[in-house]
Length: 198
Image (cartoon, rainbow, N blue to C red; front, side):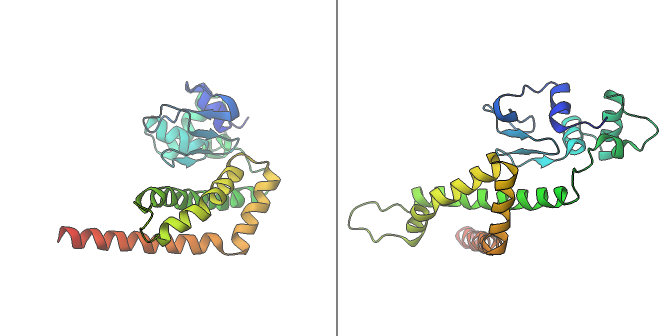
């Protein structure tokens, strides 16, 4: 018997609500922001993610090997098999793991960009009708809904829709461009902060 992330989370005391969401045990979470899938978990609050072994390792502060042993012991998994092999579900098809990685990567980049747009919409909003409208504000107004929709699709849509969306985002290079840009902006902010301090 292999253990899903959801089964492990329930076993170790997490209350799981609608849509397989739970309060994240890895940060101070008042509203459920952790999604528990069959094969992996993802927290929209703190970004914690991984498979069932990663989950138990973080929860009990164990190494991956010790976490796998704990799972094997707690769930009565065949002791003759190596614990990690026994505790982890085999991907239902070989591309599942690769797709999960791609999907998580797309979602992380989109969420980072979404936070940036939300900040820009507030920080760069014109203070009076005579103000010159900032490019960052314009971009935030134009892109916010679209990026929000993409994040929703990658979080809640059916697998087929998510597959198509990830495929589209990679084919048109949007994720790579966004990631490059976010890194560049981060460097600029760091440089700007250093000059302010210095």
